[in-house]
Length: 130
Image (cartoon, rainbow, N blue to C red):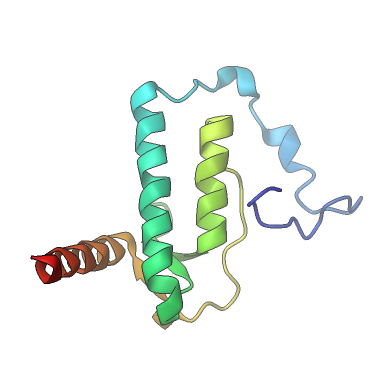
């Protein structure tokens, strides 16, 4: 079973993204991820799992990332983030995706916030064990 989000246009002959394949420069031009890059992506997948475990029960739906290209925040649900990172591992690049529809910004946190929260929970747990 794939953890990638379901394509709403799967098997649709009128798929609006069908023309994107013509723009693809081909897999031959892509360099595979280096060992170091693969390790970083695997570490991010591990971090993401921790973040989700800690934050999803508190009502957070995913992470927000400030896009350098358009200077807008992009909201990613947990499943989409995980799917994107797994696709990057398998294919060497991220796939095109649709942004979240009318996301509630209060339901998303930044990667830095999630990292700080996870670190705080870990430190609090270690302190209570001492």
